[in-house]
Image 1 (cartoon, rainbow, N blue to C red):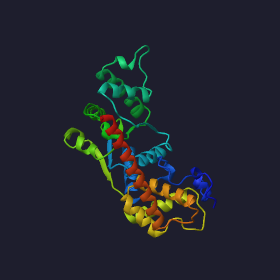
Image 2 (image 1 turned 180 degrees about the horizontal axis):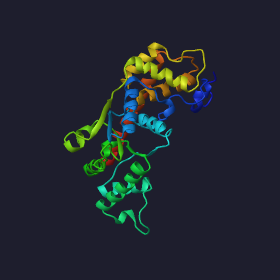
Image 3 (image 1 turned 120 degrees about the vertical axis):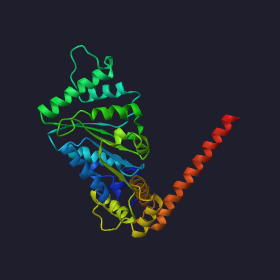
Image 4 (image 1 turned 90 degrees about the vertical axis):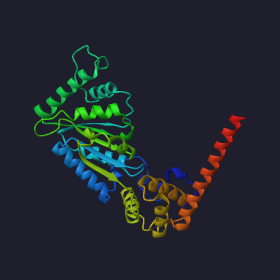
Length: 302
């Protein structure tokens, strides 16, 4: 192995077809742990039955965004579902949120009418007519998915609650999936009218050590690795788990750095010592960065 090669393409040097530990939420790299598979399966059931509101809670890095992309991937296979995903729900008021729905679902307004000129009542009226037409007349399922839902303010949460009042005798006219950090729970727990409308709720937790090993092996295999060597020894995986506490995002980031180090040091495998070395380098870099930041603050104060 030539350590003079550009390590940006380490995955090709090691025999991968693509990067195995990218942090982008690629649904092809979705590893269905028992809890992630349970969450996805239940979400799909709730959506097919048009039960209304589903909420996924989880700490940073537990796989909520990857789960949402896998959900989109599954929905895209069906021709009877119309869905939209909001990635950054930082709306300042109810009307701004409703205008975004009108635009993103391509809801037709009368000629010459600007959505921004309408008040919340008028916007809800157009949205309800759209939902009735699509859901009842055309038998389509309308789905709104909101990632980073902990950013929703109370006015937007209340707007969502009102939208869930649009229903037939059998089902809700709009299906809503919220994925948010644990602080979302503290926002909605005291909103009894909102909590009562949650048909399915689930909390994603970090992986255990066995799942950590399975995740690493799955991503290596999915990336097309066909080498005979076992890239991560069990002792290396134990170190990775100990450092990341089973958070998928942290696991991916650390494994990425370890593979780069394998290339740079012209090694064949990652053992515990190599993982510890990578962790120590990262800690030293962070310490140096913090010192530099502190020095900059001191200089500004003077």
